[in-house]
Image (cartoon, rainbow, N blue to C red):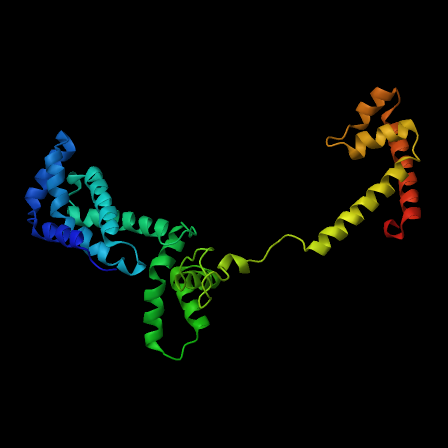
Length: 284
């Protein structure tokens, strides 16, 4: 990613900011922590912008605008300044490095692809270290197979080999619009979406399903016509309703015991089975 004129100006300003001695840094941190001195916080942040630039440069190979990486790193730097505890006597640069890197990494993960990647610590480590580890392992033995390299990376990062293989495939490709024309095609030709597999049934399958459905409904209606009024009521309430009634509810409604309702239901189901088997051997 090329560096723009605005990026160069920002880098020049940051690199010209004076370093802070340990005692001065400590005094500014105390002023910000205790008195909320904004000027003290800004001086700490500006003195460490070169740290943001250094860390952001490590992520330039992900193809994102360098200025955006700098801004995300600066957000992490301000977060570090807000949380820094000078009484621990740790240099601010040591503390801020983690916040800057975490902020930039989150930005890269959110924007590198429209497909959301894994957000666990193991998946993040795989995303940011896969290329480096693969290159280092391959340098040791040029005859290693891809599968062997995947296994070694999986062991080093404590993830599955399948995760390594899938992440490698993601990093090897980029997002493509479904409306984009197929490479090498003529203008106005096919786009990528034309080659997506459809889960919808084929036209002949839809017609077959429609005809078969109508036939099955006709068979069911004829079978139901063999039931008497009480059997029909029980079957509708127990088998055809969205929310089936209980045996107790039907018994109370019909003035009979729940055991009698079960007997009538079983008899009605046997009638339906016989009628449907007569209509088509498929129900036998």
